[in-house]
Image 1 (cartoon, rainbow, N blue to C red):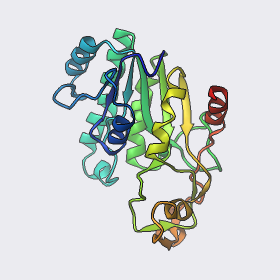
Image 2 (cartoon, rainbow, N blue to C red):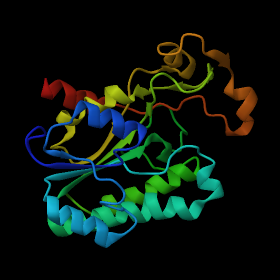
Image 3 (cartoon, rainbow, N blue to C red):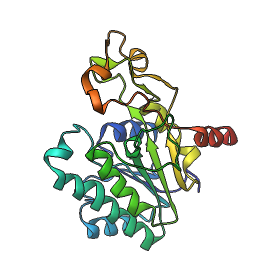
Image 4 (cartoon, rainbow, N blue to C red):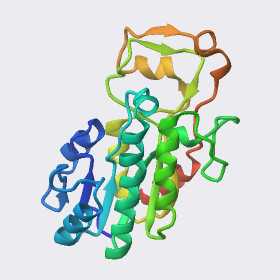
Length: 242
């Protein structure tokens, strides 16, 4: 598949990640349907749009994410969009023989060990993670698919405070976007993340005045020091590509 020449549909183009993706890739072969054009909650809407466009791939980023409390307060909406919506996309892609690339999250991991690998057991630490794992279950039933467990953040860092005692490997949205030409022909599951460091040090790169706080004192029994994911698989692909 040629990332720059074949037709590609991107769901969630109006979101924060989608807006950056659409700025980077804005040629005529990329399609960013509105909810009116393609509502992921309605299978017929998905099927009809994809039948009309006939893309080679769908990058499925449409989802409910923040605020995280949304998934506790309104689980029905989370289920409809993140689980059923992803299932609708997957079924349509399978019927039409279109590849699906699903934007999942590092939150599917249990964080019981340092540097979670793609082959490690999953046990989401919150309901957002559960909703994205529900989507993963559908996607994994279709062979021509790629799941990206992404550890990413907005730029500049959105919060005024950041944990100094949580180790992670965030990437900014604009960094993740640039990886897609490498990933387009890959299937399976790949972790996407950057340099391993504290959230505080990561945040300072885009928000110099961010304040230091400590998760151990705030989260108590829910505190996990290591929230980074293993990116060796990604690094190998990157080296092969270049």
